Length: 155
Image (cartoon, rainbow, N blue to C red):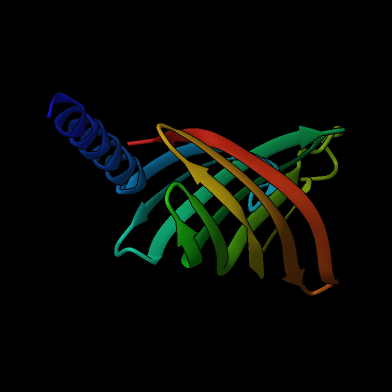
């Protein structure tokens, strides 16, 4: 009699732990080659079991040229099983690029633009969040596909 009740208690604890991990609605994460470009700091919130909204921000300075980007998106969990999920998301990427002038005769240059972003990939969600994805940025110059990853904290 003791064994079945212990087994039931263990199964109840395990099913509660799995549900709690899968139901964490907020994420803070760092991306490499994601929505922010070379890197990004992001936050998203699940609104329902299969729908999330989020934003990724990024900045960089390279050879005197600087950029800032902000990428809001809507995500959809296509398939979920326990802590794992296949997801897809789409959104916009707002970018501002500027260069300061090295000489007083020239004021420098700046440009602001908007493009689209789309990605799909795999997510593992415990307290630690891990994402691997294929991503594309779409803008005036065409589409640029690449693969990326994200690691963060779900709460």
